[in-house]
Image 1 (cartoon, rainbow, N blue to C red):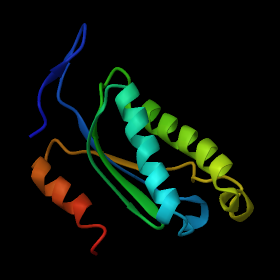
Image 2 (image 1 turned 90 degrees about the vertical axis):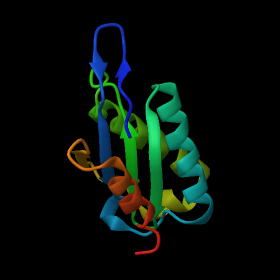
Image 3 (image 1 turned 135 degrees about the vertical axis):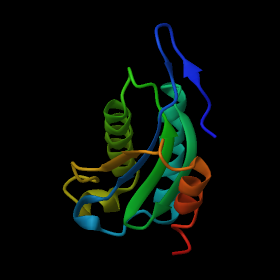
Image 4 (image 1 turned 60 degrees about the vertical axis):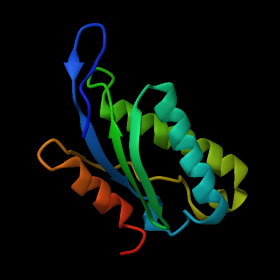
Length: 131
């Protein structure tokens, strides 16, 4: 269950399911790139005090289940994750620079998970690897 959180001026309970893909949906999220990407996502979420509930990667997309302060905004969180991971992964893995003009597409999918039981969404994200 997503717990109620608070900041200076608001009390909230906001969990989001976010999905995004590499440019041209290329299957580049594998092996060391996959491990480093997960590390970078965890870093950004920790810095922004966002609760990373579940993270799963596939070779051609990323699933993220995260709690985020609505005043900070899910858009800013996704933008920071995608920006930092693109910059650092392309620096650390030169093959990504030669295969793609940018690492991520500009678009992403986001949905609030308030209407669905959180366990159902966590199970969906966890089962992406075996689907």
